[in-house]
Length: 279
Ligand code: HEC
Ligand code: HEC
View 1 (cartoon, rainbow, N blue to C red):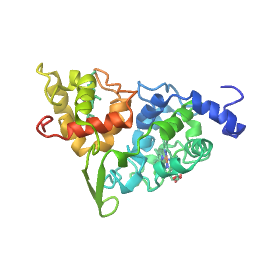
View 2 (cartoon, rainbow, N blue to C red):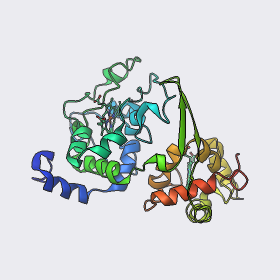
View 3 (tube, helix red, strand yellow):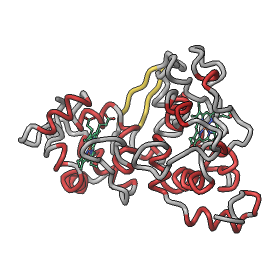
């Protein structure tokens, strides 16, 4: 973009940028914006060294601070405490912010000009005191990429309360959570078909074994069958099923056209422990 690349250009230009944005690229960037499966190549500011980001990757991945569900530290990530290598989960609710703000305001919040700098000393001190803030993405991402993220947040990301019920107890980071009603209201046979059409070739008809050994190997790596994964981490699978599991070999690019009903149906099907058993 030339003259239309600033959010101050007004609502029409912003709406055009939003309409032209790539929701799938945005969903992948939300996971890990420098992955091979995104269109990211170099930081927007040539003065920023990419290694300063990738060496402390969890301090820059949207999902690392806001969760796969955009709900922050009071939902699925209530137990994900900070470590030397990762930040505290943010306390704000991005899902709520996105629902109640304009695309221009979301763009500005993500871009966050003047926000936490890309500086290894802020993320390598082992205390996470300074590295927890939302980074200054104006130095990292292009406006087009930020619009892709806005499109994902506004038009792609699911309302996970439609997919399962989470019960939490305690408070971050020592809280705990469990899931019930996974896929409630879905259509089991549509879910079986969706899984069989889009996942079974790699993960096996029952989510743990396709008979040629390949997928057993994958499942050993991931530590769970696909049924177990949906029962234990539905918040993560609702994202990966659509945008992919970045960096996989063979590539798992996700079912980019899947809507929330497809995922709900698949979740209901996969919650059957007889058809889709644990490892
Ligand atoms: C290191 C942690 C961290 C990372 C990484 C991060 N954020 Fe944030 N983000 C925050 C915090 C904390 C806030 C609350 C405001 C602040 O402190 O700047 C916030 C605020 C926001 C807001 C405004 C919502 C509100 O409630 O004010 C949006 C939208 C947002 N982030 C989206 C993203 C996206 C998209 C990415 C990835 C490109 C991302 N964030 C990466 C920590 C992070
Ligand atoms: C082209 C093959 C392929 C297809 C199709 C595929 N996957 Fe995968 N999937 C993989 C690979 C490879 C991995 C990574 C395994 C590893 O880490 O060793 C993976 C990983 C996963 C994981 C684990 C993620 C994690 O973070 O550990 C889940 C869950 C998953 N896939 C679910 C699905 C679902 C659901 C579908 C259908 C919507 C699907 N996959 C389609 C190949 C595929």
